[in-house]
Image (tube, rainbow, N blue to C red; front, side):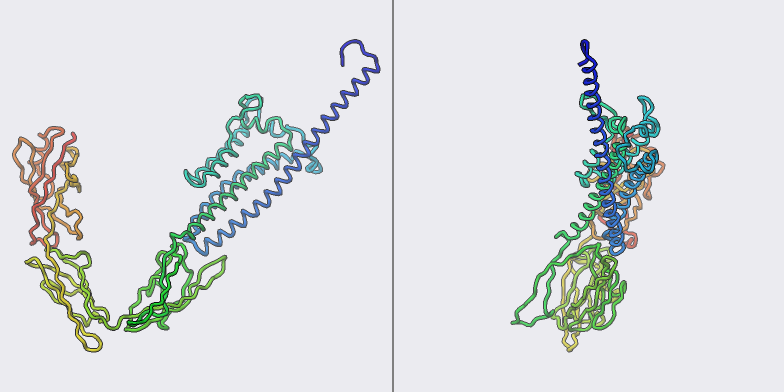
Length: 524
């Protein structure tokens, strides 16, 4: 079009073509700028709505945490952490946008076609081919948000949200259409019109708010799903009455009830046969259950009535209580059992319970060789010689009838103790330790897997190093002669502690079985 000699008319036509093409390009550029502006406005409106939902969620969560702190306090703490992380980056980006728009005349704030200059962010972030401190700060803010949010999520919590955060807030280099790697901040913000950069910042704010909204929603859903899971339910039996006569039809119903350790009433108003019950005195709250600890009372039916008050959306929800129990009036046998085992051991005090249902403890008497009463239905058995002991219990029912029961218990000796060094018994092998540690170590004796906690006092032992005379030691630590023999032992050599003598702390007269020896492998 510009080659050869052209007439004035042709030159004019060519010039008109150039002007026309420039006008088309200019109009397209203005339309693109307007499109960015409209998109930014749309995202801003969406951000306002999302922020309102997030604020409403946090207010509702605060109420739930007040109503049921055991269930929602931990969730609120994590939600507050997410809010703090999100608000920090959102406020920082809003500050940049405010400064950016401050470079325009007030009347140009909504005239997107004049917002075509890239000067603000180019001057703020870049200096030639290098980043200015403000540009580096921008990247660090994005990185900090991403890393802190990923830390909140941990390794296994909501992997889809974690993946979204890593993708939306990545500052890794980007490949352009030519396959060339370009720094993230240059690729997204260098040389772009002001309205385009502002839209990108608004979009980052939208990602922040959307991520927060999705994460908070899933966290709350997880807590509620956990609370409603079937594993939190137990089966209960409901009956119209608590006792039946022979020949009657039992009409009980089995139902499910939710037992949640985090669902605890704010207050309770309960009565037993009209008498007001007090928390910590007559009942306790344990794992979401109202655990009663009242006396069974006299034989007959007893009613428990009242109301439980639970917090819900800042208000109180009433749950009526109407139940009861029956106290047995006429048993026909005594119940005798050892509290810890089905035998009694010689040399220790064996706790026992002797009672007859329906008869007060002060109307029950028990006897047996070595048996003595502590208080109420609690007794202590101190067996003597022999292999068995008979324990008899008797009581008088309210109608004057006598109930008598005799039970036989086997008597066993305390099992053979095991020697220890530094609290270790070698578990069937040798204890490995340094020579210096053995010199100051304490020799002990234990009863592995024994049902009673017995304190054994070691009074002496023998120490043997191969090739050297046996050393007799009094007490539970090595004496000078034993230490001398130890110093002559070789590295890796096994020394032995045997013939350990000990007694029971509060029963020194009882003769224990021979204590198992301990072998020690020297590591230096």
